[in-house]
Length: 306
Image (tube, rainbow, N blue to C red):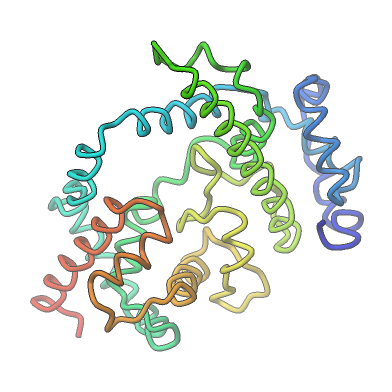
């Protein structure tokens, strides 16, 4: 359940100031169960109807079909092939252009990054590496609102809504059962993230309709999921709110996340990989972050700053 009285007062008035030009979207039958569920979990009915009447919010089963299709592809990938990938890293991020951009960011923000290191014990190069891989240092934030993507996944809890879009043939009975189970699991996961997004938006006076996000609802220059933002978000510039599109808040939040998951600059590489893995559950990703960090440390040792 959300906090008592959520969106009944000031935040609801904020949402009511938005001009929506497509009220037909709110009447889409696919949203009804989702809207009722949100109300049951503590949101004001009028507020929910207002959010779901946004012109940008249209039902699209393709959001879920892409996710389930990706999961199915991984399921079908031979273990030996997955093992080879997990032992490598994404070489794009240590190319001269992206690495130069990361080093420039590190130099420009080094004083603040050092302050974060002193407070959280997370070295600057690791935070810059995360920021580079997640959003190209804040320049790639997602093409659709996070609300749109999460609502669509939450509403698409039935495999029949998008099965024809999954380009897989000769699926076994076990595959079909697995697909339906994973669809329901991902739908429930997306619902929890949607509820958290609305709570986070309320707590930080943000219009949830306008938050850009990744294909699956991560947002901010650090690409936190809403539940992660609530648990680990930090007000880095002490302005009374957590804004993950703001560098001080995002960098401090990233460091807080790593620290809370056991990061220490003196950990062995194996243990560092396990901590970074918690940020994005991919060994390939974790190896990429540490490789970029190593490269940045090498450049910094040669050219500064000290």
